[in-house]
Structures are given as structure tokens and as C-alpha cells.
Length: 411
Ligand SMILES: *Cc1c(COP(=O)(O)O)cnc(C)c1O
Image (cartoon, rainbow, N blue to C red):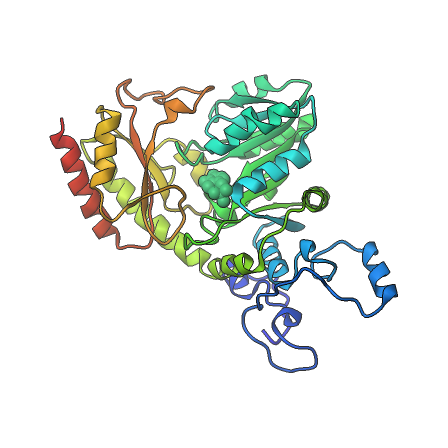
């Protein structure tokens, strides 16, 4: 982009190809041509022409102005700018060295001693650990609520409730929350609403126009997309963005330019990968739901599955992450099923180009909501979470078919 293009009115897919490619980050001053992708700017010291310019630096605090390495350089700015551009309603984006660092960074910026944090019961497990750990040590009390019980959520609010952490769908059991309703209640009561939007990304769900104050993502998952980089982000409107940014600066939060370049590269194909993953996941979820070994498919994109109505109402897209629960069986039999899979890697994380499988044991982590879910049999407890990658879904189905066969033979 040797030309400076106003991308604000363009569609997201077009923005994804242009975002962050400012002429001053891809070209050389007074030189007419430019490279496509911003270079990796490795920098601690930023140099000033004179003392007046060094002193003048104190007056500003924004991406795109050289100051010092901890405030980033063009590579990180390009990524932050691209993320802000695809996040409707965002004034800016703060980058964190991991998704969990984004969660802890945001919560520590929002909460103070004496506050109560309401956290959805289907939250990512390290978010729970944070509530039971560091937040507790600094005098913040975390309480959990049933993600699908709106009245229960409202009843759980007290005078000290300062913030709510949502995750919809929850990245294990995929329960979809009524985010607009929860956000509206929060707004009424002066409670800060925060959502972990890693599952959908802004391409599938735009939290800020739905009334949420702060949206965060593990860029490690879809944005990176290649299982080779860790990063997180938080985006918000002007007021919260400024607070998050200043808090992150006090904490010394900074990401490496090499990592930022990798995530920016991943972002270019995000839409395409999500589309393919979603289509494959739906095919596989449909196939699983017809299998006698499967008690329940937890995939909100699937008609008839839990959360599907809310998903259809609020979301514009999905992804390849969903779970299924086996009919009866044991934890050991489920583990053997996962061991039998050959195309699915066994490992944490998701959102990469390659498929993964992990065990699903919600009973171990839920405290405020039922498991098995309402309508499920008590013995249907053990599940598998799949992250569907870019393989041909016919090969993935064949792999699942042979593994289910081995599972069934164990009786
Ligand atoms: C993986 C994940 C995170 C944490 O991201 P890391 O980069 O691994 O720290 C946060 N939220 C959700 C929903 C996740 O799946």
C-alpha cells in the first residue's frame, strides 16, 4: 500500500488485507515504493533529534509516536491498529504477551480491593484460577454464576459487584450467554462488563456494539492460527482503552515485534480459515449427532444444539471448536478413544490449522451450574473437545469413526 487508503468504510475481509499497512510503516521517507508487510522493528531505544523533542515526548501517549521500546514500535502498532479496525466500536487495542495475560491485565486494571467479580461458570479454567488466586490475595472476591440463567445472574449482583467476566460460548461446554441482556444489566448497575471473545473473534461476534465494555482475545488461537506464537489483546471504547493502556504501561506489558509480525501474518487469512473451520466443524458435528455412541453434541452452530437460538440471534460466524459428550462409559474409555485418533493431535490450545482433541470433564471445574446439563442422563459425563483445523473433513470423520468403533468395542 504505497497509497494511503481510508479503510473505515470497507468490509472486514478487505480491511484484513489492508489493515496496519501505513505508508510510514512499510516504506522509506521520500521514496515512492514500499513493501507489503510492515518490517519487524526491533527496538528498545527510540532516538530524538534534540532535547526539545525528547521533552515533548512526555506530552503524548499513543501508538504511532516513537517514545521508548516498551510502548512498541511500528510492528506492534500495525497489529494493534489492525485489531482495532476489525473490532466495531473500539478506540484502541492493547497487546499482551498471552491470552491469559490479557485476562489478568484487564481484571487487575478494572478491579480494586473490596470488589466482587462475577465470573461465568463456563470460563476458561485459568480464569477461574485467577479468581481463586491472585484476585483473592488482593482482596477481590470472585463469585460464579450459571451462564444460561439470566435471572440467577441478576440475583447474584450485590453492592460490591464491580465487574463481570463473560465467555460466550464457553470454550469447554460451549454454553452461549445472553450477552446483550447481561451487558444491559451491567450498564444499568454501573458494572464493567468484560468478555473473553476468543471463540468467535470480532468476525463472528462484535461485543462492543452489543453493550460490552471490554473485549479480549487469546490471539494465540485463531488470529495467530498456526500454533507457533502466544499473544493476547484487549479492545475497548475510548475511556476503557485509555485506562487499559495506562495500566499495561505501568505493568511493563509489551510484546515482541517478531511475535507481532507472526500474528499480523495470521490475521490476513483469519476470515478464510474461520469460514473453512466452521463449515468442517458443522459437517463433523452433524455426523457425530447421528452416532449412537454420542449423547450430546455441544456446538451452538448446530441447529437444535444448546445455545443455537442465541447464537443465531447474536453471531455472524463461528469457528472449529466444539465438544461432544459420550453415552455412558468411563474416563479411561474416553481417554482410550482420544489415544486412538491419528489425525487429531492431543494437546492444549485450539484455533490452529491442525485439528486437536482434548478430554472434557466439566464436573471438575463447574461450581455454579449443573453437569450433566439439563436433559442429559446422569451417566453421560465424559466428553471430548475438538478443534477442527483445515484438513479435509472426510478424513477427520473417518478418524473419528474408527475411534468410536474402538470405544464401542470396550463396552
Ligand atoms: C487459550 C485461551 C486463553 C488463554 O490464551 P493463552 O494465550 O494460551 O494464554 C484465554 N481464553 C480462552 C477462551 C482460551 O481458550
